[in-house]
Length: 314
Image (tube, rainbow, N blue to C red; front, side, top):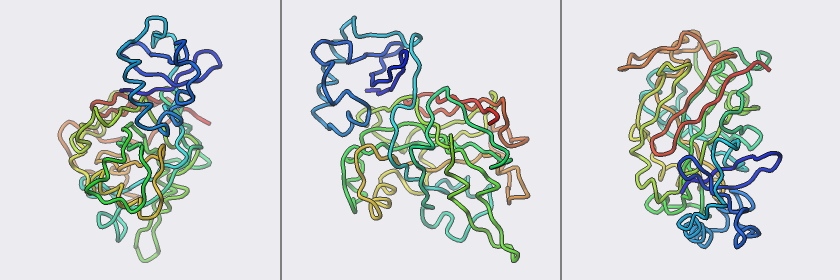
């Protein structure tokens, strides 16, 4: 099942993506008023009964409830209250950058909020007053469906509703800090959390369609150039281990999102001023600069889709 949020005129609502059409529950007489269909977040919080009812609705797929995808605008499939983020979670990414003492030894913990989120086709803002080194990172995002605290890794995937794509947009010149003695630390507040720093979408794929989240191909293209190409098998901490890790600090609740890190190929790797160490990998095109207005970012994850966003000047 693929959840989307779409806009038709001024109305924004939940739908289910069926190839090139959207099934709109609001167009069905029997389901139009169901609270579970009020939004993606309401649907996720409604749990298994809502999932089963939606599967029956999708099987019926009444013609009057189907809307051509070309006639609507997709927005972010959901607005999570909190995005719990893990940095330095791919071995090859750690090889290409300046590292802190904990890089690769424990998950690097930072947070983005709903204010950071934009949807497919929406703009990433280039604000030179904030950063002149705007970087992009394609990441698998876990959408929590079942609450829990201190969740064992062995059962962690039972708490997953589904998966989507997040572009972890980063202000590198805000993130990477050095002491006069040469040690490195990260300012993960200003470097990671700001307007349009979390493009999310284009859909949420339910967990029954992605049985192994550690076996997904991931790519980033910028203006058509292949910048990142890896698989989620290269994570240091698996999705299950990250759920366990974050649940030690927070009660994970339905609709919260965990983003899982990015592989090699960032623009940071070609920036020796910030400790970049380009690692030549097959087929990857090294960045000649950081992201600039006019760039098109395409973040792709197998079985989920392509998240496209253009960079524009503030």
